[in-house]
Picture 1 (spheres, one colour):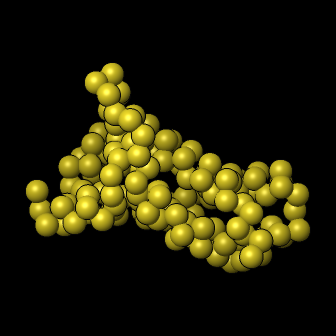
Picture 2: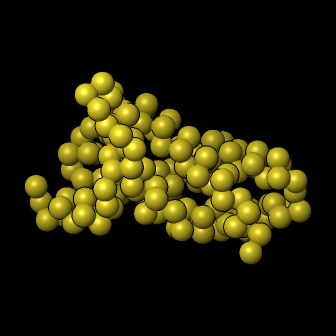
Length: 130
């Protein structure tokens, strides 16, 4: 294992959730890799989303909570450039072995990754009121 890979694993911290023998590759990857990265990168994701709102001149703060949640999901699901930026913030913290797993299962992992990120941002929507 390279020094970079060792550093990344230590820097991210422990797995979040449980991994059992019955866990699929995607479930294991989600709990061992994605959840720790999403937790680590939380502040930058929130800052990126706030920048996205300002940059695109969205009237986000005057919307109802339901509309804010829809706008959050829409930004990540429909704006390919923004979604790819967020994806890069996650993939950039993969080890070489994790990247190999990701490449083999990228479609399923991308769906999990973006779904988890949408839920993370939606659950913090109140922080955008600062």
